Image (cartoon, protein in one colour):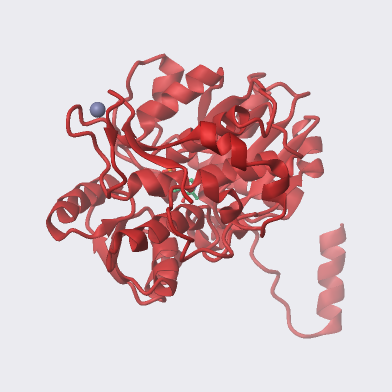
Length: 411
Ligand SMILES: *Cc1c(COP(=O)(O)O)cnc(C)c1O
Ligand SMILES: [Zn+2]
């Protein structure tokens, strides 16, 4: 049983059937999945959800598939931890880490979106899937498509981190490195999608794919005991995750699963690629595309597809947006590792650094609940840390040498 009504244009409201399409034929607005919330009210409850397995499909009525899912049975339900050490360090009362650096199977929140996209691609009968990626999407599509027995073509900027490249090739995907940045890759992929008729996860499958990000928000609310936090800090690449966490809150409120709360949404970008943050800070109506130059490669999208809608959510919620330099990103990664024992990637460093900035600026108050969205794993982005963390102490295998070293360390 599916509660999906169809697709709807975000701009003009025109409705479309459930097909692999992503833009409105009349106004070129993006299409979004719409649901029958009146029907849903009768079938969805906290109790029903709580009885189900701990994965993204426990919210299946709010995901856009018509048949049972075919991939992603272990994806999602990552830890939400109360970060007491971090709270002490930052001088705040209540702060939580939603930790998708341990999302199964490829250690980023992209496993969520890809599980939905590939389950839907199989429903549509696609035999070949593809994507344009800044790294984590490549990992998730290649891992999950091998489970789904789909042929896979993955397009990336050629200068990605080693672990993101190997963590794609190992699954046997066809990996194509492009001489250019993500925006160049994406432009090429739009042309390929038009010509080859594949299921492009972030192009013609985008309306379905993006819905998977709502599960990040659903889980935060359920794990807080069916409560909405007052403040949520979210990293932005295309801006999709941020808009979908907002949608997840609006849906749970509408269905009576949580009480209405004034939640403020904050965006986080790297200073070397901050088109959305710059527009929010300057009060611009639209953002200006940029050429990315940052160590946070997974967030390096200079012309973000959902940037405009991310700005709308940030403004409507009463939140704000900030950015972090490369140095601050590394400090953010270290801060989370040293306080909470979590090794996040550069994108997580951006989110941590921005959270700290917004607290110190007094934008986020110190006495209200804060959730920090940690979306990827540090083992995948080691390059920027090589010269920025301590090297091992080197000694011979002799007790005297260790004793001498120990005295040096303790003094
Ligand atoms: C893709 C990605 C994001 C942001 O995704 P958007 O939905 O495109 O804004 C955030 N963090 C990590 C680690 C990512 O890989
Ligand atoms: Zn339209």
